[in-house]
Every structure is written in C-alpha cells, then in structure tokens.
Image 1 (cartoon, rainbow, N blue to C red):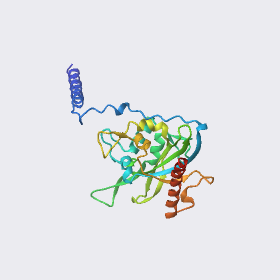
Image 2: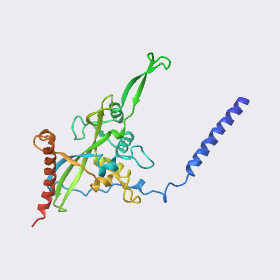
Image 3: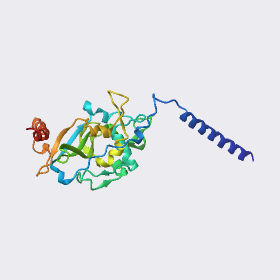
Image 4: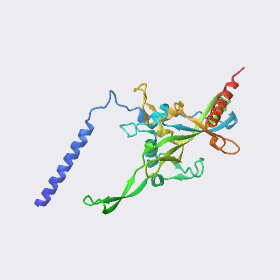
Length: 284
C-alpha cells in the first residue's frame, strides 16, 4: 500500500512539473510587437500558364550562386537556426527529411530521374571516424577506440547550382524565366581540414519546393517589417550568380573550352546575348 501511494505521489509530482513547464511556455511574453501569423499561410505566387505554341524562343542556362557574395548572404546565414529563421540549406534538409521535397541523384543527370531518400543523403555526407582514447596516466597507452560521428554542416555548402529556362512568350509579349532545379554544392576537406574540391549533393525540382520556400523567412537588411521569403528572393531575382553553362550541341560547360579570364568573358557574352535579344525585340 505504501509503495502504491509513493508511486502515485511520484506520478502526480511529474505531471505537476510538466504542467508548470507547459504553462510557462504558453505564458511566455511575445518576442516582438505583433503576432506573426501571415507567414504560416503564405503561398507562392502562381506561374502564368504558358502554351507551347506561344513560346517562339527558348534557351536553357545553368548558373552558380556563390553564397559568399554579399547579395547572397541571406541564403547562407544564420549558420545556427534561430526562432523562425533558418539558412537556405537547413530549410532544404529539413524539408527532405519531412518528405515535403524530393531530392534527386546528381551523379546521373539533372533531369530529376532518380530520387534519393534522406537516409541516403545523410549516409553519404556524414563522416564517421574512429578516435583513440589514451590513458591520462600513461599517454603512450591506448585504453580504447571510440566511434565519432560528424554530422553534416550546412555551412560547408557555399555554392548553389541553378538550372533555368529563358523564353519569349508572344501571347504576353514578355521575356520570362523559370527556375527548374537547384543543386547544393558541398565543399570537400581532407582529414587535416584543407579544402580540395566540390561535390554536388542532390538536385531538387524547384516548382515542387516553392511552397516550402514561401514559408521560410529571410532576413531583410532594409526593413524588418517586410518579411521576405526564399521564394520571393528567387521570384524577384534578388541573388547574384554567374553562368557556367548554356545548352549546346556538345553538352559541355564553359570550363571545358575556356579558363581564367576567357571563361569569365564567355559567361558575360552569354548573359549579354539574353539582354540584347530582348532589347532588339522592342527596337524600332
């Protein structure tokens, strides 16, 4: 009887602590001037429907966004997630884990053919190492070995590939662009922490990811009341990038036939061709 009474008192004590903790969380002061409820219901701006018969010109372009560029900092920071504010890579990984976004194998192609699971991505980019544990009294003696798992660090993704189509719609008489896919590019480091290259992580189909991006807040350095989202940054082209490939009969990148300053000039030539084509359409 005493044992049962003690058990009931213990259970009641635990429930009381839990209730108090929940009450403290619910009664916590608002961190701001108003309740931010609009973002949770935000949806991406729908694309204008395009008919094949209305597209009289089209070109496919591949770009690289360097997140170290100042204009791209909203995609890279914060390195550690804060309340309602995550960097772009963390938003991607969380959505893939939840199943809201499908990742595709980048080693096959960029046509979104072979899906990847979150577990496959985690196994590929999680480092597991064996670390010796030494005797504190005898540093020459190894007591045991421990397996250390180094989790994926979003800060190691400093470049993002963007696949997009530029086209002219004669129905609306506009030059338009649609982003088709995004591929995070991870930095590679050796055991000593020295950088030695890049690797593509996965491709995502951008139209599928837009609802997730439309509810992910981005820091606005000019006006904190205007809560922009990642979808709006892409929609308004508020990012810096450079072209590394255009569709061609050889299916080669600029780096395959040009290097150094010649590669930069070639990227600028492709960008200027897009601008000049649209400009000449309206020149009388």
